[in-house]
Length: 219
Image (cartoon, rainbow, N blue to C red; front, side, top):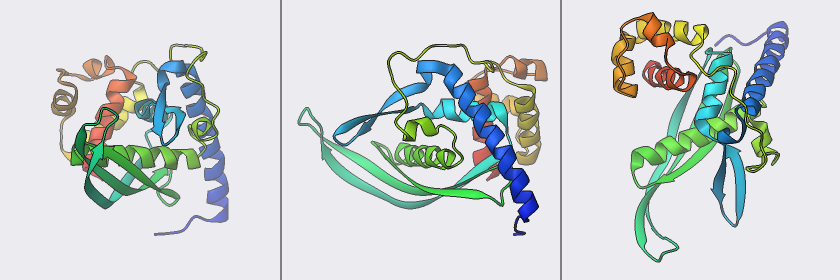
């Protein structure tokens, strides 16, 4: 792959800083509903709800993607606080993510645990994506310990509905994957859309889920 020139990198760095700034402003606007308590050994951490991170990024730019490599998937038996034993799966993945230009990627390791292999892998991917985004300074408040679950002001996000940019990106992905968007929307959201106007009626969160579904196929 052709490497970035110094001039290209300087220009890209400036664009990425602007993307990061705008995404973080949207995350702040989402308020407390975008924040959750994250389980951790011996302490409580506060982080962003993954879908809000993705929604915020898609609201600013749809020129980004990722792929992942499964490192390990193990079946274990754990004892819950109740004393009951439960079989769980622990997954570890490596995610490679880029924004604006696929020549400048961030790579991180993520982990996930769940009662099904698929959900464990999904959790690991989500974990690694969040870490990659933090390297772009997106959602970095969570990693700096600057989030609070109480007292966060609530605001309605400025991009509550699907944006024109997202609509166009869905149409592009539909052509690329040869899967018409009415079929994809029906499969993912169980909603019926027949036209672009119907597509515009979807919320930002819903259109983001459609984009993510297409991206998993296109990777």
